[in-house]
Amino acid sequence: MNKNFGFGCMRLPTVNDDIDHNAFSEMVDTFLEAGFNYFDTAHGYHGGKSEIAVRECLVKRHPRESFLLCNKLSTNFFEREEEIIPFFENQLEWCGVDYFDYYLLHAQDRNLYEKYMKCNAYEHVKTFKDQGRVKHIGISFHDKADVLERILTEHPEIEIVQIQFNYVDYEDQSVESKKVYEVCRRFNKPVIVMEPVRGGSLVRLPDEAKRVFDTFGGGSYASYAIRFAAGFEGVMMVLSGMGDLAMVKDNISYMSDFKPLNEAEREAVDKVCSILTEKDLIPCTACNYCTDSCPMNIPIPDFFSCLNAKKRFNTWNSNYYYGIYTQRDAKASDCIECGACEALCPQHLNIRYLLKDVAKEFEKH
Image (cartoon, rainbow, N blue to C red; front, side):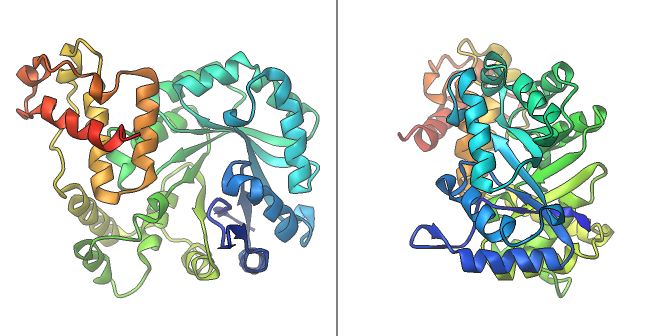
């Protein structure tokens, strides 16, 4: 079985807000027939309907040993420790299985990690593994590299780490994909990649960027993004949230006989990154001189990175990261306009004005 490419079950085909089981079944069959076998779900996907669809379209129709199934413990579905075991047992029932091959403590950041610790979630998941109801323990992660380093140091039992990783976020200050990946390598943890095409934004490229890839005379825009991620050492799996059969067929066309990007393709990816980063963006270099002087402790470079990403792609992802940062730090609107940051900015940015743009974009509600 090919195990370098997984089926993310968070963007499944729908009809009238319900998952189209016939279409999903055909996608599952095509995926398995091509030699792939890893499926990833969570209770929050499709409002709980993803797990049911996995049961009906995968579990009931194929032998249990023919596929690997990953599910997740998510903090928005429990408030107290005593709710964890019933939730896990419900997940087994919803998916129609006796065990999960992989079980991840989901969407960890600095604050959610504290909730997992308070509720002894790691201990419960280790117990699930001891009972044979989970084969491998892992986490999915959305925060800075220093947070991941702390988690992996305190929990050596973690076997795998799922991270957001793509050619745009690789050097992005707000996501720190490269630094997070390097922490995984340093701790010798296999990596599962999520968002390799950044929620589809690396398919919906501006025309100038499309022309760069079109010079190769073949290959979908998604193929360059997924092959970029899959080519890194230690990447065990790249997930793709596929919404129709055409996506499945396209992805397996180049992942069945996977080849990393060659030198010319890597140069093309770099050109596309340059195009995407030049779209009326804030020229912040993340030197952090501004944060050292800010009396409100506003993470200014992180906020500018979020706004730049929003301008490039206009997806939910940037809002998500802004929410993470404002859980632990001040908001952009907390700026008291003292100007201390601007006095130290090597780029001579009008930071006070730009923070108003950030607040206008991300604090609408």
